[in-house]
Image 1 (cartoon, one colour):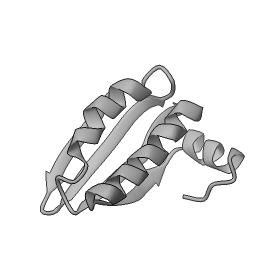
Image 2: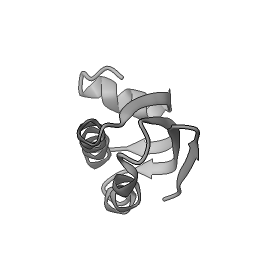
Image 3: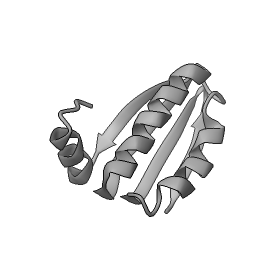
Image 4: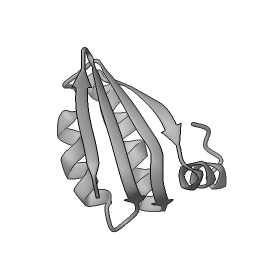
Length: 94
């Protein structure tokens, strides 16, 4: 599961390419969570997510919560059809 992380000025750019599912959530969390709090802002691009399930949604919600605790403002910069459908199914707006 490729997670790309780049820092530009005071913003971390995070890009996830592929699945955001039970099969990838633990690996992504291990790569992603240590970066929270490293920058004041984090832009999350979900435009290349090919599949998303409940575990992926839980990871996104956990990252949102932990980013807030770490003082990082998290924003979404893109959503794939899979992300949009999952959020709609759960009556969440992103």
